[in-house]
Length: 193
Image (cartoon, rainbow, N blue to C red):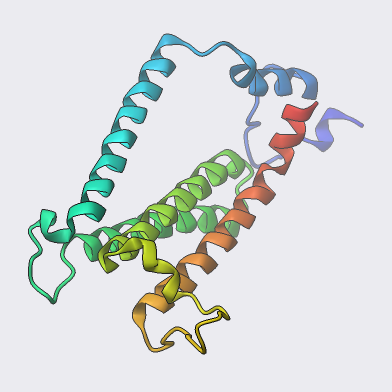
């Protein structure tokens, strides 16, 4: 096949230097197979410390209650609903970025799509924590899921916003995970080879 078949008359080529597919694959997979740099290790250490701090704070909240947030009234959600909505908004931003690039059929969208969808997945996972934390007694959270049991017909209240949060978050997470995985298939094949 001739080179002219792959060059768009409208757009500049994204990759310069007349590289073959094997050279491009080596350039792309190089950082994955290389030894981590000191900067990367420092970033992972800082991120791990922040994650540990977050888990300790969640543990304290579960142990002592949401009064730690200054929320000691029986109504109002305060931090948890604010954080829930904020994380869902971050997830929607990732979905919007992916959708706009897909709608306009941008050839360079794949790397950005994967990052945006990963952002969506992790944001939805973070958002899902806050309704659980707010309920208190998180170890009894399984009561909001409809399932058959031996205690009689104990079913969820389908009018409850918490149950609809479960359905919305799980559906959003599943769709985002599938969209992310489909975009990762070529990368997983490159890593495999």
